[in-house]
Length: 132
Length: 382
Ligand SMILES: [Zn+2]
Image (cartoon, rainbow over the protein chains, first blue to last red):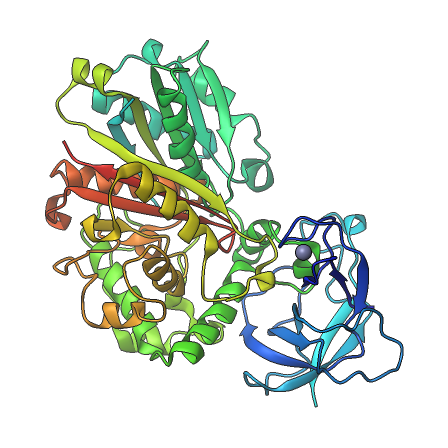
């Protein structure tokens, strides 16, 4: 699941926060972005990567339009419009602003043991983005 | 109460033999000497530093410095706002004097970084990120690459305009004896340097640096009892933006710059038009554009034109980073915001040597994280 939250005022955010960053209300819905198609807002390909990270590391900010984004599977909660952005790796450097991408699940995005962050303090799985 | 700065110092920036305690003591001691204030007059000591524990395994550095400078029993506190720790220290120092809690406050900012490899130092700094960013290997340089691509696309700006920032700041740095790099570069060299975070290249980034800087604060009444050579803090403020960078509505706008400067302008009574000189946080060339716009010096999407037109050159109408900026001076995290104000003090007191420009009002903008926390300080001359 690529989890986003929606608050009673319709603001959608990824990642989840205990309170809505826009209005401070507690979120009421969960939205899964994993089966949707998004659009590249911007991207980069970084060479000087930290310990445990692939090199080069291509990354993008991806926007999902919840009103119109194609849903690949049928089960989706809280699809009531709005846009939401996420960030993640790319499966390729052949990409441009405006390209359409789909999330691809990766079990371990970087080596949890190599960096400064305590390995057990966070999740290391997630989604990279692949052009369609 | 008007808060003044009566002493200022900075160490040589670059690759230093001294570790964090030695760097802080060097700048702190020089600052006391610069103002002829005795150690026992210092009531509050603030130490701006991001990560001495992570870099060096030395924590509690405010107490170490209080002891090394003979300041005890002065109250001592460490100020951490990541890359903006220095600016945050200026804001805290102003509060300590303005509130009446302290009659004399010494601020020392510093960082020791160069003993770490680039990959390790990048990881220490990237530890500020949210887990969803960290797990993808997001670093501060990669945020800069993402933002620069969006900026160039959104405003149809030429890639060369970013290189001009690096060329300008390197040229300014050649006249700064404290700078890490004192070497001019050309647009061609900047445009052909290795890619670090596409579309940004090596010369779009500041180096990894050791160094320290210090400032001494008191009321105007106390300042006058020591010297005629002091500057006034006209307005200072700080603000936050989203921690998770991709959650901002416009990736090319820094909300923390807008909000902190709005309040600093209000407190000072000055407008962007009144500012004669600015020290901006050019950790990456693209940041000089974003700050220039969000501080109100140019319309959104037009900073690149101002740089191309030479407005920010030393002989332009608003010189930016006469010190050489973080780009050529170097960026010892906790020291940078303090060193920005050090440059403004030199300029306003007419002590900037070959870098001297005519200025009565100066502004410093210190950016923490990728705009997560920002301080703006406006100072005026005697
Ligand atoms: Zn909300």
